[in-house]
Image (cartoon, helix red, strand yellow):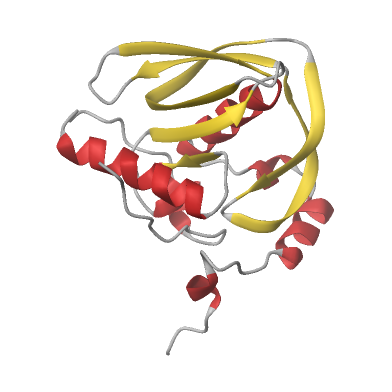
Length: 179
């Protein structure tokens, strides 16, 4: 069942800094949410998307990105938690669909293991290296109410916030709202 793209929430919306609720119902509604999240991520040309980024306060995210060996991985995690990270880190530019436009260098673990559930409630673990590890940490942090810019010093964070820009997939969020 193909999903429907939803608007991506941008920085400033309180949902992005609110920790999510655990998913307790593994039903058709959850499966539909996951399909909508994939559709939204692809329209926005992203590699990961947390439910909070479409205004839903549930602990679920989707991803479709490559690892350090350039192998593509596509999947979702419900109620994810990071269970292991490598000491080795990689510092590269990072961006976010909810902070559209600019990127900033940020150190992340080179390898990470995340445990959670699939859409049917079955336990799963995903291990990622390189860019996939970065994505898994980034999306898990979203579900805890943390954006990548929260790791930057105030000067860098303010520069990023001044550089955000509308894209076709989120331009209505930048239009002035009637008072």
